[in-house]
Image (cartoon, rainbow over all chains, first blue to last red; front, top):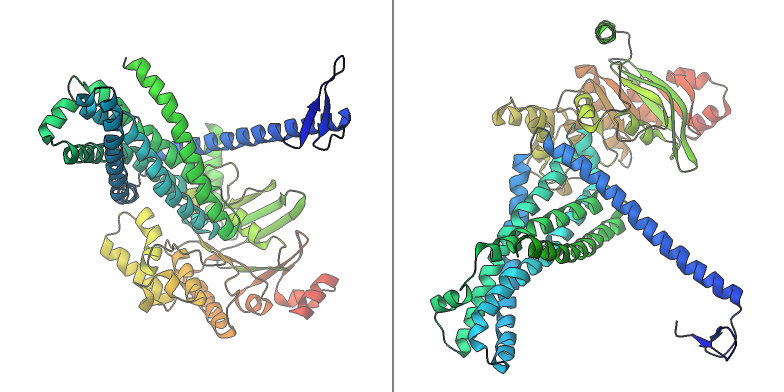
Length: 292
Length: 262
């Protein structure tokens, strides 16, 4: 509140003033606090309402997915949409991360006389954290926006109603297939990002300080166990679930024509990215506890 | 168990009764916020009968159709399809009832990522798994021939006109050979020639398939052409229900005004 100041005189209660030194009456100050508190309460209420609807939506999807008929054809189509079509972007992002890590880590490790640790630093950084989170964020951007916009567009043009009117459960056909495809493809895309990151990390290093790929890999994975690599890779299945669920939810609940479609696409990306980051924090802690 | 048996018997008897309505709407109420859209609607449509629901824009005609097919839930009242009440049914249970119904949306609502042929094949692929792809293709071509759109089978919905989209939407609604068909403004936004063609098409399909048909429209001429009975809605209520002649003879101020303005 840059336009306000507080004057505290000896023996007197603090008095709120504007920038011009005009004393703000306590009544107005109280009203302002109540306004902020009310707004905060409304936001929290709004979030809880949204979360409640999300859980109800999730329950409907679970019920639809668990009962036949199963929509295999649409599921395979979604595997292609989410997986194959995201692969180039994810691979590029992984490669870029590998190069940047190699350049940055070389400088830092050389300063501390630990240049020989460079392959391990690159491999561990890419596989344990950078690969999974970058994949999660790239997919939430590409796939989250795509699913959100596609379902929202179908919703506003009554295509989802038409599916329902054709006696087909849209939660089974449209939502369950997309969420499952995201869950299956995220770990595979993460592996691709890891591979590209490690490989480009080696390329970046070998251009400066030649080292064979075998030596780089041996040095990078020295002493590593499956526990070091599998949990971080498979945690991205949770990212896939979050991205699929939120994007489908935002798409299916939209209204209001073209503006609604845009809003659904944007909110799908923003919310799924936010929840992927939050889930990452929680999952890192869980992995550290479960696989010490 | 005795209750179940007696219910089953009643339903069997009901199906045997040809005079019983296929669609029975009783005391239907629906509000959106403080706006009352339907305020105690009663309608009954029998096999082979076409009922036109008329009224000004925003009087809840489309909402009525959406409630009948279960896309909206009423606040109170009931809708029965073949004697089966649809209230409180899950989505999958509703799917069983919807297989016997066809719905033509106001804007066609064709799936824009599928071709015209794939749009019509969509219900067949999901509910007629025993049909081979060749049989499905044949059914699609038959349906397209019925609506005069064979040449558009491989076109995308965006490549055909609004009138053509409605024809394709109608063919899709007929794909499962429904006993009940609901048409939401079938002639809205069409030129007079296309409107006349759609009207003729509905009459032809009605003669061939003898369905229970509910048509929502504000086009009095279209309603008069295709419907046996008309229901005029105003402020969420049915003002009058009967033949066109009954409407003409009515002394009700709103009915007179509606007929004079149409």
